[in-house]
Every structure is written in C-alpha cells, then in structure tokens.
Image (cartoon, rainbow, N blue to C red; front, side):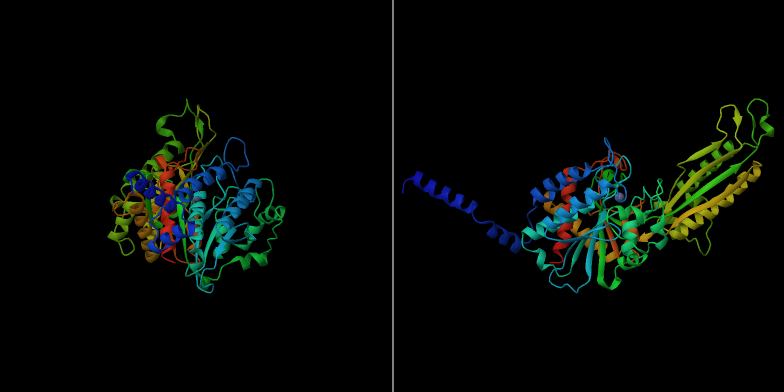
Length: 475
Ligand SMILES: [Zn+2]
C-alpha cells in the first residue's frame, strides 16, 4: 500500500474515533473516574449563568434582589429551570426557597443538602450566594449527562435559600432558618419599610405561609446526612495565600453592642478644657481601647478558670472588632456634643473568649468614663454563637478541593488552606439541623457586597470541579 493510502487509512480511523457516539465517551469517563473537567459545563456555562443571574435585579444600574421581590422570583424561576436541566425534581416551598432533588439509588437514605442564597444586598456583587447554587447545579448536571445521577448512594438536594442577607425584613436567614426549624413563628409578621409583612410578601407571589405550614417546613434531622455550602470568601486570606479554594473550620460567633456616652453639652469657645465633660473625646479613647484590646488580647486578659491559655491563643487568631457607625448630638462644629453613640461588632471563633473580651472591655470602658466624668451605657443588641464545622465532612470537602486542583493543574497542589469565616452564612442556620461544612472560593481583593466583587472564571471552575469530586464519593 502506498504511503499516502496508509496515511489516509490512519486518518480515517482517527476521524471515526472522533465520531464515536457520545455514549462510548461517557462510558470511558465513567469507568476511569472523572479525569475530565467538563469546561463547557463547569466553567463556561457556570460563568454564563452567574452573569445571567447577576442581571436579574429590581433596580436599574445595580444588583438588588431582596426577599420575594419581583427579581427574586424571576431568579428563583431561572434557578429552577437550571435545576431541571440538571435532572433534578424541583419545587418552591412556603418560605420561597427553591429546591432541586435527586433521590439516587436509596431514596430512604439520609440526604446531602447543598445550598446557598439567591437574595443579595443592595448594589451587590453577582457571586455572593449565586456561586454556591450554580456550582452545585453544574456538578449535578455533569453527573446527569454522564449517567451517574441516578447512581448516587443517597439523595442529594440543592436549595437556593430565599433570604440570607436580611435586607428587606432586617432579619437574616429567613430561608435556611425555616428549614432548620429555628425561625421564630413571629417572623411571619415582621414588616418591611412599607408595612408589608413576610407573610404578605409571600402571599403576593401566591405562597400561602401560615404558622402551621412554617412549622412543617422544618426538615426531620433523621432525614438529613449533612449540609455543604460553597461561597466566595469575602475576605483576602485565600488571595494572599495564592490559593483558589479553602475549607472553613468554623463561622465566628458575633456580638453587637451599642455604646452611649453622655457628657455636658456646651459652647466650643467658652468652656475651658479643664472643665469639659466631652463625650466625643471619651468615645475616641474608648474606640482606641477597643482596637488595642482586639489587636493584642493576650495583654489585657487575665487567666482564670474560664479564660485559659488556649482561649487566648484562639482569640489572637480570630478576634476582630469594628466600630462601624457613630453619631453625635448635636452634630455641629462649634458645639461640644452632649451625646455620642457608636456600635461595636465583635467576632471570634471562641465563644468564651468573646465573652471574656466583652467583660474586660466593659470594665475598662466604665473606668475611662469615670475618669472623664461622663456617663457610659453599653447595650447588648445581638449575640450569635460560633459554629464549628464538622471535621469529617470538612475533611471530605478538603479532599475534594485538593482533587479538583490536582485535576485542573495536573500537579500535586499544596495543602488546601483552612480558614475561619468572619461573615455569617446559611450554614450557620443549617448547623441547628445537621452537620455542616463550607468551601470558600478566592475573590479579587477580598471585596464583597460590592459591584467590584469578582471571582475568576478558573476559580469558578475549580469550585464546580470540587463539588463534582465531592459528589463522586457518593456514587
Ligand atoms: Zn452570602
């Protein structure tokens, strides 16, 4: 046979190979485990969907989707379509959460829940919440088209929670708290700025949320195996570490205080410095104290039975304190104010340590106010305990993250970083129902809750491959 003919024969053989039906390609994928990375679904389509969802807004020019708003409902419909496209059975519950579920081979087994939120803050970024929902749907879609969805050993359910940010009703986790069974019934009657209640907002969208069916929304803990959530980090740790994914060891506990300092209001020109009882200068000293205390807690805390060396060590790694809001009365350049109020937000992984800091801070604040002859009052507005992520589930998620990076780079990556979450997430509410674990995804500049929020296409891909690798352990 002439050389040309041999070349043609070889060429036609390869052309035939390329033209083999998809089923054979699928069988290969199936039998070899997923070494394929499905960029068309896990990267391109996931990115397109994030962009599409990012356009579903109640406002022109910026992204805003609050609980049960028209844009929230449209976003829910879009997510529901994508869930169905991935082969999931879908429904919307009485709190507006969108569910997509596959029973797998053992419908009576405990289910894995994967979720995040579909609502946003005002002038939001398009990744916060949406990334977790889309990464999960994309990974399940790959299992579907490769014929593995029905072979899952336990049911898997994706939940797009209707409210996490709490913008409209000033109460976070409406969606996930209802499913976890920790949403107070009275929340149904909470009102937004226009006087519309949670119940009323649902009613407008033909959802009948009565006290009775709110109770029925709670999942039976016996029917749930665990909850995982993918979320953008919303901080700079992963970017600084040069790593696209990280596993969350826990979500910080939080206390919010309002500090009021009252002094003696007076004329800026006539009251001698020695005779002043200036709440502004006192507040400044209190705020600087707070900063020093939270920067170096070990220098302030005394050791006793409650506050051990390990508490102080944990605090040193996780304690953050912020004064984010301050107001003075009367606010004028030629008046010594009569009153200054400011907020304090304290977060830490160690609940006892957080209490120790608040105790120490309060004592020292009152001492400063006494010395300055001003009156201080510290009002405790909000408390939430820290959530420690489940070790086993986190370790599985870490392995999945490692596997994803190995598949994507073809090399053995460094150990996936473990970090804490200073921000609250749906996983916090879900921890009341089941064990939880979270995977963080790097974001540019650590920026979130802003239109400047950005996750690279490759990092979105890494997150989706990680969810796929996690789900593959259940096949
Ligand atoms: Zn979020």
